[in-house]
Length: 116
Image (cartoon, rainbow, N blue to C red; front, side):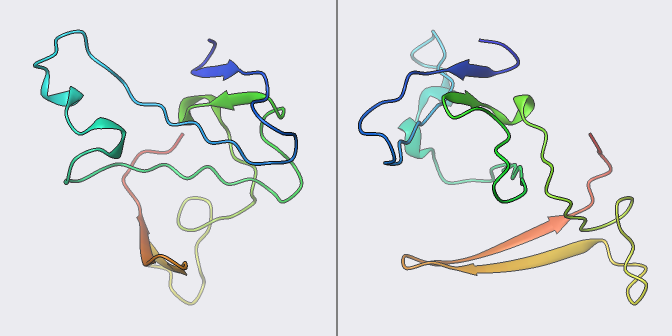
């Protein structure tokens, strides 16, 4: 494992999606971070979306990585310092709404003061 990434041989039939769920585990069985299984527990979570350009994979097909091992290349700019909307120069958030067959999602992106 290097930079939080790993190479796995394909599982199942070629061309069909495969899913990997990774979660940390702790030796102490009473550690509260072990509760909830892979579904987690109710509460606040931090989510990282790493976006890339269509048709340009960030990693080879058999390589999987955590967020720390990815660098997006989507050319998408949401807020300062990457982009300042001339019509909304003081904007510091973006709201993206997504609808799926199962539920509706609202993603709110905001400046946290940390830029990688």
